[in-house]
Length: 312
Image (tube, rainbow, N blue to C red; front, side, top):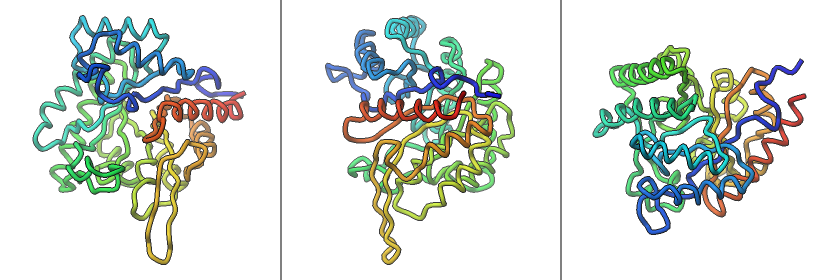
């Protein structure tokens, strides 16, 4: 019997807005642009075949839209034929040492604005602003970034704040998820599962974006081992892929982004495993470099092909 949450054609697969950056056609913040500027970007997404989008807050900060602007945003989505199955935050960690209070308030606003738009899930992470070295690098992951404070006191506070957001989400009829990212409280598979247990809330799950680990020039836990640990807890999934080569003699690692079907991660096996475990969440297609929106569109088609082989 087919117990999947959707059909192969209706499963929500969203486009990331990261390729469009944060500026409008006049060089101003896209967040403050006229609705037609939003529509121009969103029409490009729809033309790629997408019916879903995740307006990550590097593009438009939905949590900071006024009621009037939120209404405009809702209208643009309707006009472009797009819906939002989940919304992601980026580099707004509630544990930021300087802006943590601001970001926890923002996170609560985002949950409520998402509820107004009928968005059932919000993705949070602990990764923080780029360092100057990361901003200069060809690929930001080639330079060391933020490391979370692993002291028992800081870790307990982090779990408490995420639990607070999960409780808010549950009261709104929503869920939250935690995006995997190196050197944070969810920076390894074992660490993420342990932290989720510390949060201990049914409205909080994991976003197993292990592409964030594959691209690093450091030792890598076997991909299958990570999925075995993470997929039972997955409620949203950022998907992207990288080629990776390791020289066992020197320890040198080389990586670069590629379409999902070309990289190290076998997404056909992983998606099959996830659905077998009862995964019912949306996918978010991401890519860095090159013509990213075109690659994202190809990744959507690849996922649809995989789903067609799994779902009756």
